[in-house]
Length: 116
Image (cartoon, rainbow, N blue to C red; front, side, top):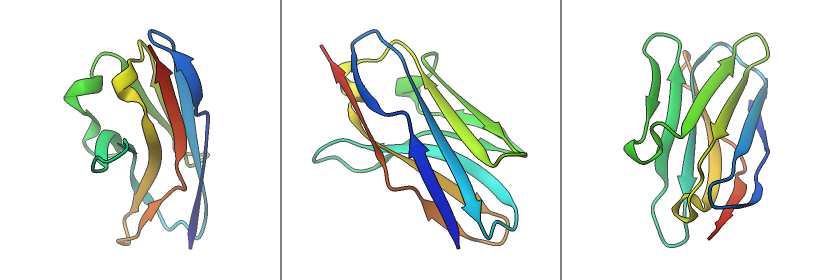
């Protein structure tokens, strides 16, 4: 089993920055992809950014140029630096990990609230 622990959410004014982190632990056979998704009230969960050892990074159009995803393979952590935040970025942000063995895991979520 894999455990994901997220941190870094909070309340920020529009234009501000937040940094989310996710640490994976447990029976990790090999992490292929790490990423962040978000879900706003009454909306479907959507991809924010992913980072894959083979293909690199992928971002939602809505966050390109403002968010940066990075990964520390030695520590099994993934970080999302969020700059120039907008009220529409308000959501619960979830960490996700995919392993080479076919495992798929979600974190518990962390709230990000951007006030106007």
